[in-house]
Length: 354
Image (cartoon, one colour):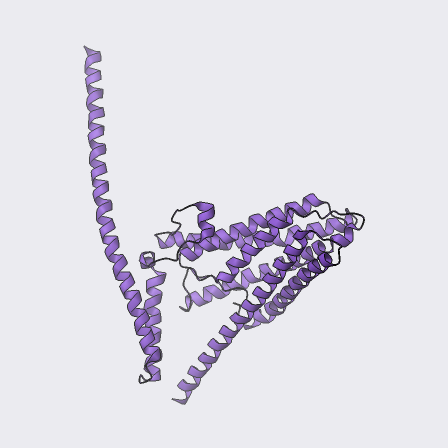
């Protein structure tokens, strides 16, 4: 008798839990449906406001009858409205950038756009932390190889440590490219060239893994390009440490002044203030020239027959392409900065005259 009562009690509890589960499912489905409808309304309103800001900004800029002072004030107000829209929680309701084929290739057709601003900012902070961590490795790894080349390997490096370094470079640039594509989807302003640059670097690291560098009888001559590349990488690691520090400080200042969004990252290498740029720019131009020199040297060694593998030609071409692209983007950023400074000087002069 007691066993039957216990079975009945357990059966009633199970039935009760099934009913509660069904009730909870109905409430959750109703809430999701209601949230979806409200989300669609907010999306439409966000798109409408964004479109209105664009139209008004175009009218203010193109209309020559508006007083310059009033036009400047209106443009500042429109910039403020745009900043509120794209830098707040409403930004998740604006249409995002389409996901790249690179992301789809690695992650599949999944949505990597965060719906909450705090999650987006965590993605950006993780990207900055990744750059800080890898900058030290970028400096130390080739430095150790160069020291061991002189002290232990008598000028002829074994293939495995160099291939290990190239495998790490492939991991590094793949991680950077993935993070930068995700940041772009979430509203960051990374210039496309820097992502393409990392694609090229990934490709070069992959090709370098198949390159037999320990050739005889003249191993040191065959590894001349590798040695120069490691020297360049050491200098690049030092420059990356400087860039990360200066760029972070500069971006925080721009965000505080309302000139940048919290999801933005610095454009390339020329985002420091005047004194910082005086230190960074010579280093950057020297690095870009040295990168082009290593590329030309690899092409030359291929053509004179010292190292005729296709990997040498391919790596030399990629190094030249990256050097030219880096130089062009650095100059472009400097031109944009100079135009902006000239515009600020003109507006200050007008205020003093008035």
